[in-house]
Each structure stands twice: as structure tokens, then as C-alpha cells.
Image (tube, chains in turn blue, green):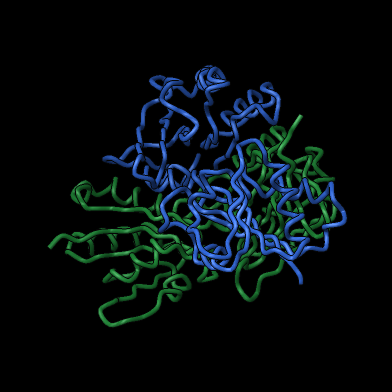
Length: 244
Length: 244
């Protein structure tokens, strides 16, 4: 019996944002692995085994998923949003690289609506011009790399989507990021704080970078810093398509 | 009778990547506007009027959509991929800014799976670390701005997703973009050419930047230039989660 491994994105929270491709894959799976709050989003049924695990267990989870697939199971590793954006897909390929015996397994990656797209849609169109996406967590890279990238992104006049802006264990990083962008002359830029987008707890707030404070974000917040031309029209925020 | 305007993303091509939210909106609409090949993707039915238009007609299309909504119609402007990424959402808000009389209309933006996410999923996980997304078309910005952003993106060691890399009217820009990145020392980086992703004509090809040639892309190609750590495992290409 040949197993398979699928890495699927559940979208930002609302079930109406889960693609039919992902729903069909979930309906055919035997095992679901992922961070516990994401596994909970998958409907239980007979024949489906749930394997919730803790955050920061990505590599171990990926190795278990590969082993189960090698045993003939039809395994899905679930991520919130899109699995390829600061989520499980890279971890699975890292685990695969470390385990050549599993490199013949059938693997699929199923894309999803990543948080920045849902947040942008709620706010208007702040990603309508060139932009970058950065993971602000320094678990996986040194803080000076983050600082350098923020300065270059400001110089390039990219809008900046920030994932994982602020954690309890590392509350100071995001405040420092805001400071760096202010030092780079971006104080008048609009900043969107999108909390728990597409869930019942959704809250969207737009301020200028001068007004932005670290406490406006938590780990469920996606932050978008507009580019220098990003503007308001009524309750909407958008990046004009043209640039000088 | 109150009309409404919805700006919806149809995903990259495969109907299994259209979100249920977008499908429900299409089922309730009275009018569909968009670039003709995208309007064609919406199933025809009684009571639904199709308004296909030409490419580069974004602002005019947006103004017509607003006028129809103001007349009580339930209008959807469709984009391929996500409407907020180099697509119709910014154009609608530009048109709205120019037409204050319509600013009270109910407007919604419905996100979708943008091409770079689908392309990344097919290739592996090349967007698993910090990245940027750039529209390579110089219809809307001066070419020197594109060059400057490419140089800064290389210096930041972002992976780079390139939309609209190459058009018949402007074939030389993409070749120049590749040259700039080679000059910036990125020659060993992996480059993914994803043509018509998620359609029957899909073709994915990965080469090094040294090997990349302008003719490998057309306007239906999404190009992803990996970061300096992006690597292969078997047939997959991924960005490790860690960075130095």
C-alpha cells in the first residue's frame, strides 16, 4: 500500500476561505498532523486520526508525517493560511532532505489564502503595489538580519507585511521594528493592524507609523506597513498602482 | 434598492482553488466585470450579465462597476489570483477616490490564492522564508524604480516573486532584470519558471540564475528567484526556515 503526504493550507480562519482542493484532501485523509489549534479546525470522522502537536515542533512533526506516509497512511500536515508562507512546507522539505529513504514518497503542497491577503482584503488593497513579507520572529534568524531587511525594504519603498510581529517571550522586537522604520523616514506611512482576520475576533485598525505602538499587535496580528504612496479613501486603505 | 460591489479573486486557474466565499458571491451577483479571459471563467446563468473588457482598461472598468452598483446592481469585479495583488482592487479604490458620490456603497474585497502561492506550492516551498513580490511591468512605474528595487531585494536576500515578467511589447525588461540580479551576485540562486500554474498548460522549470534566459518566461509565467539559501531536495525547491 502506497501512502502519501499532503501539506495543506487551511486559510486564515473562516471556513469559507478553505479551498475545495483542501477540503477534498481532508475528506480522503487518514491522519492529520499540525499545531493543535489548526488540527482542531478539521472536522472529526471515523477513520481519521488527529495528531495535534505543540508550536515549535515543526521538524519533529514533519518527520512523523513522513514516517506515517511511508507506512501507507494518507497524511495531511495542516497549516493556517498558506503552508508555504512561514508555515509547515519548508519544515517538511527540511525533514525530507535529512531522510533520503523517504524521498520517493508522493508529496503534494496545496496552497491557501495566507493571512496577509485576507488582512489586505479587509483593509482595502494595501498590497496592490510591490511589497515584501517578513517573519518578525527571531527564533529562526538573528535580529540584525531582520533590522537590515527592514531598512532595505523601506529604501525600496515596499509595503511590508509582518508575520508573527510580537510574542510574549520577545515583546521588544516589534517595537524596535517600528522604530527602525520611523528612523528610515517612514513615520507618515499608514500601518494596518489586522487581528484574527476572518474569525469572530477580527479587529482591523489603521494608524500612522508615528502613532503605531508595540502593544497594538500580538501573535494573532498581521501587520501591514503601507508604502509611501498608500492612502485612505473613506474607510479603505490602498496602494495606488502607479509609482514614481 | 441598494446595490453592492464585490472585488473577488478567482485563484490561478483551477476551479478547485476558488474559495467557497467567492463561489457564493458569484452565485448571488447580477453583473460580472473583468478582463475577458477571467469573466469567461464564471459560469453563465439567467439573470447574470457578463461585461468582459480588454486588458489595461482597469480604471474604466472600475468606474462602470461603481456606477452599476450605484444603480442597485450586485456587481462583482473579478481578477485572476487575488484581487489585491497587482489586480483590480487598487483600481477600484482609485476610481472610488475620484468619485466621492459613490463612497457610501457597500464594497467587499474577497481574497484568493494568488499566483505566487500556487507556483510556490507546485515547486515546493521557495517562499518559506522572507520574500518580496514585484510587478515587472513598467506600464505603471518607471523602469529605474524596478531596477533599484531588484538591487535592494537582492541585498536583503529576499526570495523574489515576479509578476508580469515579460510582454510582447516590452520583451527586454525581464532579461535586464535577470542581468541586474546576476550583477548583484545572485548567479547561483535557483529560479523557478511557473507557466500557467494550476491549468492544463502548467509547466514548471527550475534553473540557476546563470542558466536563466528571458525567453523562458511569457506573460503567463510567474517567476520566483530563490534566496541565497534556497535549495533542492529531489524534485523540490525550498527555502530553509533558518537564516544566518
